[in-house]
Length: 452
Image: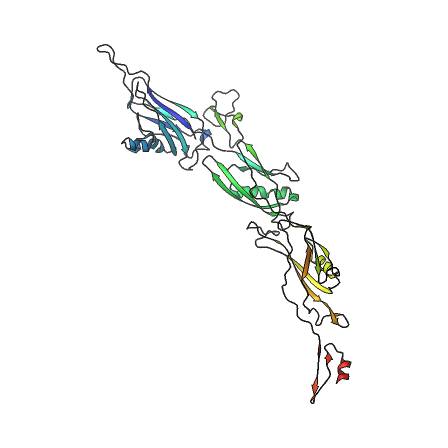
């Protein structure tokens, strides 16, 4: 915000009236007004009411600084300097303090800080000087009202752009976005990196934006939800974002009051009073902090066995093995005859291809369904169980995951459907009160005929 000092004073001291010789000077009295003109180009981006000059109501020469001060002194709070200024159409909120009275002339000094704009509620930036006005209601011998700026106001402006460190092309930047970009604008800019540098796997991001304070500072929280070079695509620890401050441009110049500055380019102000001062384009602090590291995606291998270790493995399996390849590896085991394997991706709200992770920490991976459709058994002539596919196999055993890579990486095995019991044993037939000898369940027709 801007601090301006407004001083009301009487240039001649109040002299002691010597009897019959010299009259004392008239002390400060009456009231005055101030004018604020925000129509000049440098302020049009900061103050919402910037079309015409606005003049305040009457201000008493001894007006209390704030409404609270006025109430304490037994005054109407609307007579305070704060109340009169905040009643102006181009002033939002102000903070005011007042000096002690000058005993020589009855003058006061008010220090005024412009806090927020009337419409936006944000800092108005560099507010123009208040211009004091005197008229017949302003009293005092050789009365003079002066003002001086103590601190120039400031507010963020300009554009920024982003880059990902560690990318294949470190010179690729996003399109520029305004300093107060919405979450959607930041997402659109970062999503563009997936087109510019697809080898780095930047595909989808989510973002939220929050304004911090009244001076234009913003905070964005960016989450990378789909990273195509990682398995699953919601995993992956992405490189840090680099922010570049593009600076002032023709649409958002930074002005300085340099009347008559040699070589000053006219930028739409009054005459050539307001000129672009490139020396005033200061870089502002921008910090990028990683609030949560991305998880490590699945990689590496594990081993498994089936039934009897040694005779049936182990087999080394890649973390992203395809269904047909896993089927081949399992059928290579000596205790497996024929099976069918399918693979799908699983995980609640998981980023697989075009679906984004919505819940941080969601587990995801590959799921394989193994169906045993031919099992070794005593049935002749194939040496399988009967009917085909019957038989309850022991579970697949994961024997070693030490070479498996990934945050919380693991291999879990569960039985979806228990296998049925295959046919075995024998049976007898009865006819006319007589019973045959036991007949094997897989007896041939010749054996049954002979038994009968």
